Length: 225
Image (cartoon, rainbow, N blue to C red; front, side, top):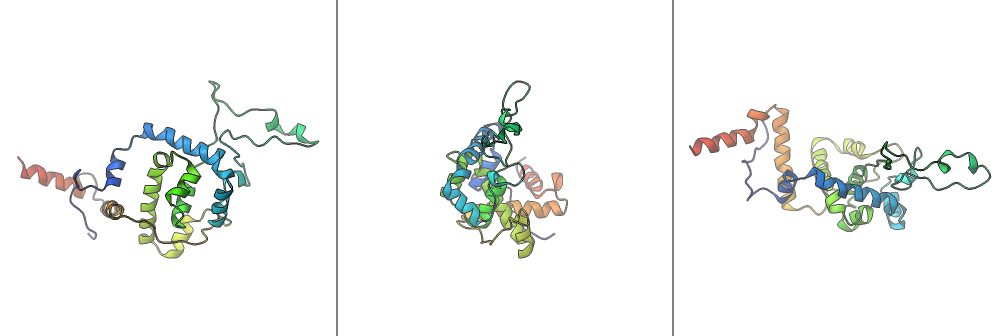
């Protein structure tokens, strides 16, 4: 079996990013993610600077989608004007609602935008803030961390053209260029090494009781009767 299996980490030597992932609270996270979605749809995508960045990295913003464009978090298109506007259905109907009368907001994934910012080296804090607002660390910070790690794994797994294909969305939204991961810290590399080692173990079915971590636990228990 190839690959290096690190010893079972303790709270003292586990990288910060790994500890934060283990302590992740899904219910606490979701409102922050919704906040990022609302900011992105209501403000960021209409901001001149965000439009410039999106154009440069060649990714459409939701209001630019050819099919079913999303103008804001309510999912409403601007009110049409002109002689034929009377027969446009969305002018006479408000946003869709649940049986309880609550509005149904459109779902727009923020992950493709996080990915594109990472591979083009535009994932600086200031740009992430301009795209996703004040809550970006709590709302999309976890995605940012994981997608940076995924970028490392993808580059390690396949050749350049396949990496380019992986991060291209459509024939019209291909990745214009890719750069190596920027602003990398030692803790991030160490965390990625741990996850990569676990993946190599999984490829050899070394999971559950066969996982290297499980053997380390057994060794610790045998050493301390």
